[in-house]
Amino acid sequence: MPLDPQARALMDATEGLPPVETLSVQEVRARFLQAFGRRGEPESVLRVENRSIPGPDTEIPLRIYTPRNEPPLPILVFFHGGGGVVGNLETHDAVCRTLAKGAQCMVVSVDYRLAPEHKYPAGLNDCFSATRWVYENALSFDGDPQRIAVGGDSAGGSLAAAVALLARDRGGPELVYQLMFYPMTDYYLPGTPSYEENGSGYFLTTTAVKWFLDHYLPKEFDRDDPYLFPLRCRDLSGLPPALVMTAEYDPLRDEGERYAMRLREAGVWVHLQRIDGMMHGFTVLAGRLDKGKHALKDAAAHLRAAFLACPTIL
Image (cartoon, rainbow, N blue to C red):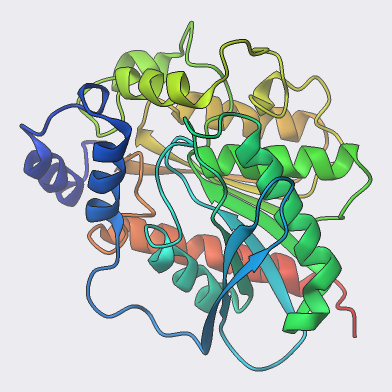
């Protein structure tokens, strides 16, 4: 179907801005925060708390969203998008509030280290450490260690998939669900049909993907590393059920959908949903895209159902 009119209006409003690949990292971070930072009154939840926890090399900032006072609540550990280079707790505050309220779960948003200051696997190590910390300390902040999910958008979706793989391969923690919005699951070369169709003109471009990966990846890296590119994993069995949402006009569409199919082939329960008329980033743009808003609500409903199907610690 054609690009959604609201999405087209947003694209037209950004026409003429310098391409990401022509800017410095600090300039892109500032643009990202301006585009996706808080606008207007945030959606209300019962409590929002900022914390710092011990990480593998330095402390990891977290933000914990609590929608209601009925412990123990299930927990979504959330990893923001931004190519592993940009993004923070503020850029995804609205997304986390919507998921917490809609799924009636706690959301623990992880402010992992970013490249190029901290290249792969620093961010992934932070995300996995934070997930383990949540499991080990859930009861201390009224969470349920038996009902923990992971999720994220774009690069954060890739991190969620990688954390699920690490949890399986390293003996826990046991996760009950994984939530991935338009994840990056493979290297951008040689590319897919969606790269050919949507690699320019739809917010995320092929050249921008290359810019992010050039900053994120170390000089020497393994393209078959399953924790870097989950689609390269040979064995996807034994992973938690998943929701994968993709966007019609997104260069990452095909690899996200292929990952969902690979999970199914491995015996993992998957709900795959393509959001027609949308481009990459529709969740962080939900305040300005009706389809993005509905997609977040749908995702929250799937997450809530998954938590309700799991036994609680009490």
